Image 1 (cartoon, one colour):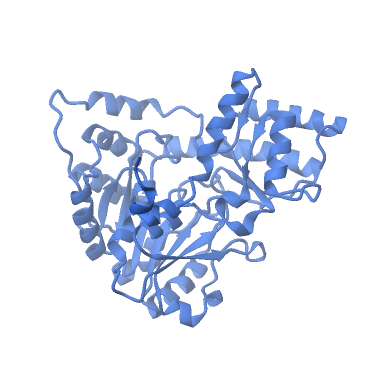
Image 2 (cartoon, rainbow, N blue to C red):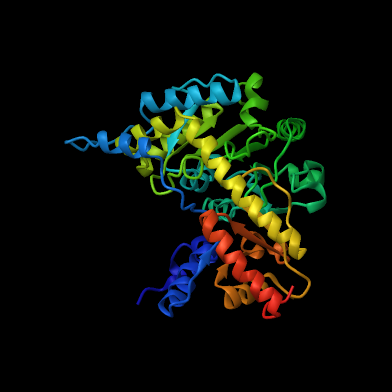
Length: 400
């Protein structure tokens, strides 16, 4: 039998990815013929647009060959064109952009490029609440993870003035995510500029997870990008991470790109070449179709806005507090005072109604008074499960 103590101690120290446990719970309930309304994993049920599927199918070649590590010229040009339309900036397709297999693998791997094991600057700040992979990637790269609890009073916007100078001297990078998962919070350009100035003053790299950048509701404020803020500075100390998973309903396709400072993009390309992370050509062709089109993104955002409206009305009626948001497809709620912890609340809700929500503590230790709902079921299913929840509240079987 293998002696696990001889294996990678950093890997052994990681907690299981919090959302993986949900599938086991869900399977057990469904085996008991209990209908489950799953609001946990951020994997929307809306179909992938037909023109994207068509582009993939039509570009499966008879001969399979290794894909480009950087991404094909066609794809990087498409990404550059999107950035010009959406952000009014010029990205050199050959220098500032590299293809990724969704954003998760790039988020996980980039600390391997940025962190030097011989340096004192090995701290990586990550937001709490935040995507657990920020911390996991840091640990596996030998970095020092530093949780930064975001405050509700500041609308979950990162405030660099809260970071002590002694810590700032040792920071290699800071993870940010706006529009924010899991709260749906957004950030202004002025706030971004303040963060960028702080980062430059301390030679800190900004790692900006912007996979929800196009997911804002029609007629609302358009979320900014750190690429816009750093454009006149040649994207110095900035990498932004983009994905088609939620924007275009392509979670299973695993396609995205990273853009920013060209020297780091070059090093990332060298790293990825050694790991073997090229995106298949037929998926790249489907990605081109997705980045070139805006209509389907607007339509998807309308759908999520309608879902959010239904949830907001239900929460208002029952005095359940949630952070207002006009972006992403997440609802960040406060656990009612009736319950001691987020886990107690989520278990009670599941047992009473079959509704699965994610306890806030999955996104950080300081979030045990919160829960997240990912608006993945259809509008009809959301209305159905909320009716069931309302009946349980009215009958006293579920307490608020």
